[in-house]
Image (cartoon, rainbow, N blue to C red; front, side, top):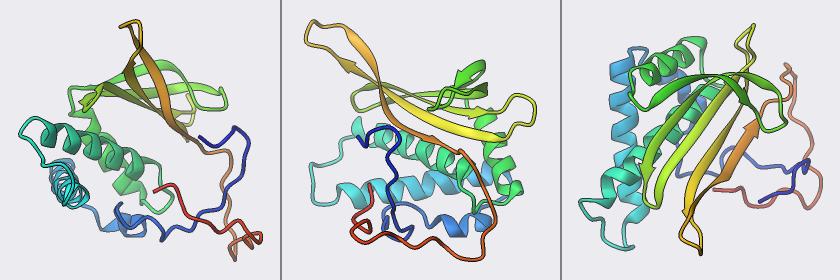
Length: 189
């Protein structure tokens, strides 16, 4: 993992395996239709990702798809290219999912406390959980964290932080920043 406080530059078009988020406004604004599209896209990506690898079993495929669905919904909820209507639809879709609960005291990666949602699902290795954290008064998006249960050598299970993102500031600019020389490497795709 990248050490806390490190600034890394990634170009948005590097990640060809995830939806092109600049098209987020094209997603349906009906929660059921959005879930159907996200699930259909997830199934295609899982099949494409695993093509030529270990064969998909009837047990593994739904677990991989479910994880992809959750991460795509999390991505749509936080990306700057989503319209307010798309983001609202994502939250309405998530609210119909039985594995989503509201938590009134979550912390984002830098430790700011807020209100949020916890989403749990069963992944290939066991239980996984993600959190979306919002500022309690304005509901401004603060960040998200993703956890996974890992079996330890002693047989116990420990929840481990896998990924996190914090939105520290937003601004309107008339150009993108110059990427420093040597900092235009591969993205974390």
